[in-house]
Length: 336
Image 1 (cartoon, rainbow, N blue to C red):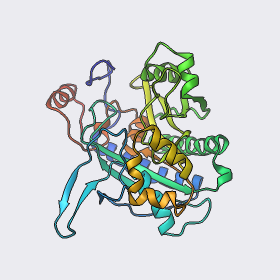
Image 2 (spheres, one colour):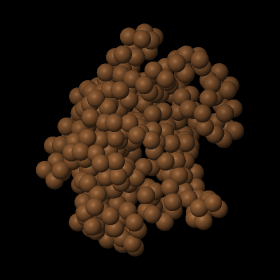
Image 3 (spheres, helix red, strand yellow):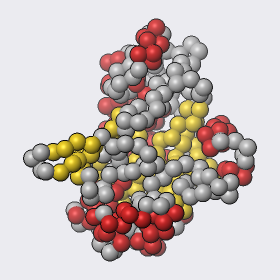
Image 4 (cartoon, rainbow, N blue to C red):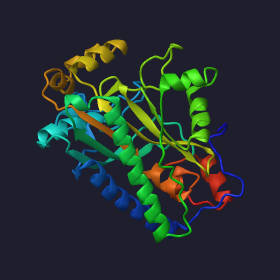
């Protein structure tokens, strides 16, 4: 999208503001139930803030600034989480989960440097999940099977949503097109990663692009990934074709997590070897954390995708620039 403000021709909000709230509640409760059954997950509580010096916060691509503040009563600085990728692995150990059991939690984050548009907000709300695996599960087949379970859960929610609210007709393609980021670059060598995703999803309405983080043969990665949670050879993004916006929408970033050897290799590639001194990284290198697979699934994004909304602000209360607010108000579209 050339402009950060995009309203499709003839678009009207599918529901009024009160119906929208009812549908959001229905989607969130239904999907949480379906995902818990699909992946054998138990619900836990998660932190909004973590201590700055433990290494639990997500560094994302390494340039985003976390919201940091001092806590006088504790005598240390804390940070609002940017994601829970590392905390979840620690929690599985702390709460004594068993093999092929996992946790599910609501993750609420602030990403202050996010560029705002139809799909991006500074407020991030996700279902974060993490499951204990063993060494034999650290392979592409297990990753793909997990993706298939997630897509099936989303499709079931879409079917229930249409039955409960007939005016909503979500289109969830169950057949997943699996492709590596290198295969995608080879198919569209002259396009940017975003343009490649657009062409791929226009042809295959549900796709999982794997192996994101490391440099491709072009010398550039498909996307940025922190080096200390996903194994870049066993991760990926789940995307759907959004019929309202006529573009891909990423619903989930997920992957099999690093073991000690992979952590050391990826820290070296990212010039982040100083992180080995942090508490989380020491636990991992000392084999005191379980092997896991995990990811995040965007709550607001899933809601807007299933409802056919054109802007994430229609399904979450956040902050927007005046130009965006005025443009949507003129079209009679309510941003919460």
